[in-house]
Image 1 (cartoon, one colour):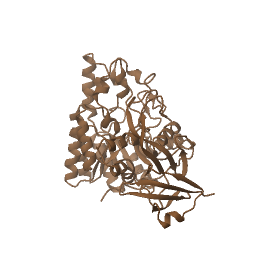
Image 2: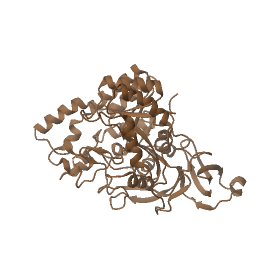
Image 3: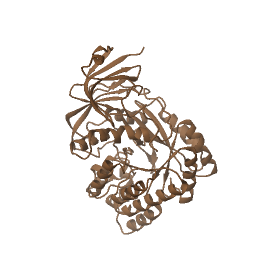
Image 4: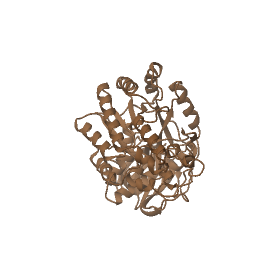
Amino acid sequence: MSTRTLIRGGLVVTAADEIHADVLIDDGRIAALAAHGTAAAESWTADRTIDATGKYVIPGGVDAHTHMELPFGGTFASDTFETGTRAAAWGGTTTIVDFAVQSVGRSLREGLDAWYAKADGKCAIDYAFHMILADVNESSLKELDRLVEEGVTSFKLFMAYPGVFYSDDGQILRAMQRSAGNGGLIMMHAENGIAIDVLVEQALARGETDPRYHGEVRKVLLEAEATHRAIQLARVAGAPLYVVHVSAEEAVAELAAARDKGLPVFGETCPQYLFLSTDNLAEPDFEGAKYVCSTPLRPRKHQAALWRGLRTNDLQVVSTDHCPFCFTGQKDLGRGDFSKIPNGLPGVENRMDLLHQAVVDGHISRRRWIEIACATPARMFGLYPKKGTLAPGSDADVVIYDPHAEQILSAETHHMNVDYSAYEGRKVTGQVETVLSRGEVVIDRRTYTGRAGHGVYTPRSTCQYLG
């Protein structure tokens, strides 16, 4: 039985528009929008009416960079697809794009099938996959074409983590050449991992073992150098490039210079780089381990360049790189050796709220908030306009957002399966009130009404942001 839902009286905010409008939902999709109080809107009837007076009505968030259940550093990310997607829903995110992982010596197909199995029947919201290439060879390059046809249209490569995910420049070039032909998008972790390993070894030899040294050895210049190199390799291959988790002013400058030449080069940053810094990594009593991620947190002065990049569109997307490890039992594997601290932060539940706080603080506009958190990630990864906007025919992934509610972010109240919050005690203005996923209410006025298995796998087209 199809149910019709009517959302009345809210301010509809998309990347393109702000309008006081009513939204009619039928059979899991947006059926129509009409200005509030007009004859068209007044004529609609529905099985359920949601009053959004005084609230924003926005598209559900699209988090294009998460790692549920990721094996890393001898342990696993602490959120499962079930707990992680539930937390995402609480935070107003209705679609995640997670990373399936190829193991060295194994096929892409085997890795992708393993991730299908992990997620199937577990997710509270819709999901898709990128593919991590850990072993670039003739066989895996051929598989890229088949994956694109299947709706897995983006491939992540690492210039970091030698011996784990690392690809050398020749492998990167081959993968870029292949993607130039099949329409896939290469995503790059841009850090010079070979040089970083030298600095790690030297720091440990000097007895520099605390978490803050994680940030000190992963130099800004080694992120900038790798970003530059990735851009040049993409130019040689004639391929577009998406650089993940950009953290440093010098890396933003490399992206801006490439974009000024008209190159199809894109950049993503994350809330941790916008709101946290090396001050957190330096917290005493090993507390800094909570903030170990790669690329690392940078000195606070880099934040201005990241905000500026988001305003000028030299950075297009804010994703979370959600990869949680508990402080007790996981992060503490690195006591006495920062290089053994599992890399990653929790954040899938906090992104929409933190970016709304950025609107309140004057860093970005309301429409830009929706653009970097919903519309552009959907366009970048082939999900638009099914996801990322509110338009007739779009999936009814809708968030009723209270822009005036105040909340304090805390591990006491979050829903991520991790024993700390990276934003503990931070006061933010704005809170998710109600969330619909394909027309089904999954958060009802701050009560979870969703279920594991509601979320479905969503194949993607190729990048819609080009041209």
